[in-house]
Amino acid sequence: AHKLDISDEFRTVIESFKGHDDKIRCVLNKADQIDRQRLMRVYGALMWAMGKVLKTPEVLRVYIGSFWDQPLLYEDLANLFEKEENDLMSDLRDLPRNSAVRKINELVKRARLAKVNAHLISYLKSQMPSFSGHAKKQKELIADLAKVFRTVHKTQNLPIGDFPTDLQAFGAKLTELNFTKFNKIKQKHLDQTEQLLSVDIPRLMEQLPRQLYDRSNEMPVNDVAAKMASIATTPPPPPLSSTTSYSRENGGAAAEEEESLPDVPVEPPKPKAANPFAKKAEKAANPFAKKTALVWPPGEKKAEYDALFATFNPNAEGKLDGEQAVEALQSTDLDQDNLFKVWELAAHRGDGMLDSEEFALAMFLVEKVKAGEELPDNLEPDWVPPAQR
Image (cartoon, rainbow, N blue to C red):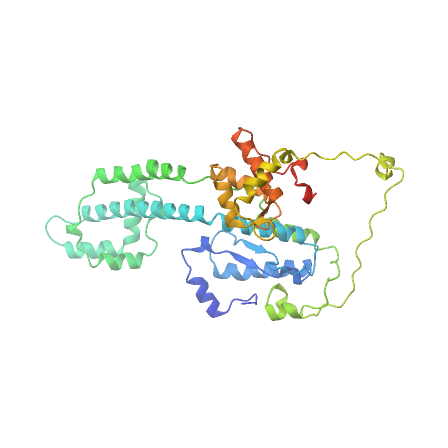
């Protein structure tokens, strides 16, 4: 499982998902174990190997990152890894909505297939002779199903993609039936199917919750390769730890690389000296210059928020865990879209918990929403809790 080549057994497993290719997510883990030039080659090899197995017109989405709590060995792609992790987490958060959409798409697919089958059955029945020669004519029609499909496709103006793809299997099922006993197509049933596809399904889609996050910043798969290619020409930084031995034990992107990484001590970069002739340098360098302290708006009602915070029984660290925080925010009766945005702004550290200041900030944002104000995409500087500045 840690190699880029796809074994026969693994290929069989992947091919068993045929028809569900849209549900597959590919993750290249421990991508920090090799430098960016080799990572670009590994990424390309993985895409090539998976492309031979998943024969889909769409390019497979591969998430690149290092999904563990250890420090990165090569930090030059840290920003890319962070974006990839955010995209993966966003994809996982969107699973409930995607599941509902897939079910609706499956319903649409079945309705369109039923419509095509109805026209095919009607056409086959209409081609049967009135008195004799039924068996012979039925065999002729089954033997030339491709022509039958083309005729129905042109006369009824039906999409060719809605027709059954396996002619042999479709013909095998028809041999067990008697075409003369087929029922005539009823316009009422076709109208009901059209009503389902054109009116009922769109109305059902409108009832689904809106997208709960903005994916406009998602980096497409081509941009990932372009990003790595654009920086592959510059030399990689030295590693932050001695070898990749632990990556070989645990598996990852470095499993393909045979070279051991040298033990190189790394000194932190020296801070850039300030230019003494830069504008406004005197005020920045003056230790007695007055600093304007930012006023924290939620602080005006902090005592009230703290009292409410205590009612949800914070843990020993003085924080509300995920379940308690969700209960607290749901008690505000805001809709899910606004609660999602409040959480994104208040719990911006990403630990899944709220301390007293973050809780106060969340309640402050809730009051703004109830007052009809639009929340910003990013936290205002004066809204950042004092302990996090």
